[in-house]
Image 1: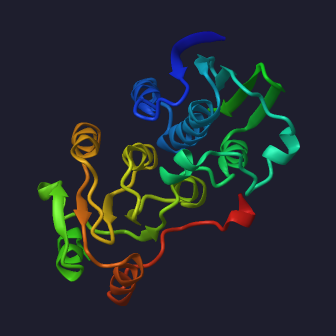
Image 2: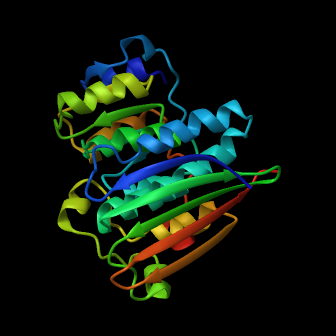
Image 3: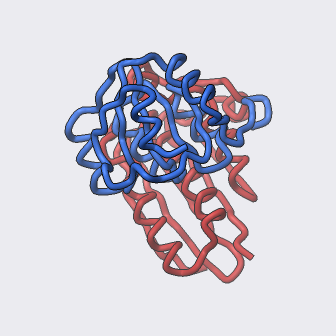
Length: 139
Length: 122
């Protein structure tokens, strides 16, 4: 797979969170991905980026493309997820008040990532970090 | 119903997008929680919200929101409006009415909820 874009993500930087999705949108439009699939990729990627901003110290988002799929990975250095099954449950959240005041932290991020991607892998180590791999079929 | 008529109906102030007021409103969705907007809406829609953070603009950009009504007289700060101006080509409207009243007035005039799912279906 060819890596086509990467972005650094800074923890607590809510101002720039979402800048990367703008650039992704333009790129995917240019290579002719349907708007329905673009929306799914952007929603899932934005949720994953927000998780890094809300919980971790720093992270990297990388986007890979081949003929029939797009893969987005988000890897962070941060607290990790203690119980991934629990985090996947709709409504479970460990978000701060700051995050909630901005309109997030409803405990729907990971379930929403799962719903919008065709395949999702989450690896996490407590006090080290989390790696999320999202696969989107485009053909 | 056009955005222009919605503005009149809710006694709204147009913050941005004067040239977009002739757009037809396809449907509407009311929520303060952006997590809900991201997870539960299933089509392009007008958004009625009391959330004025910068993230509401990002969410609108990602989802293809056709316009935003900020309720309860809450007006986004200038930097938020500036990002919207750069990134979105949609009207931003502020009304002093509550979310309940705004939604009710629109519903009464025939605007219906956008296609959506409940949190149990995420």
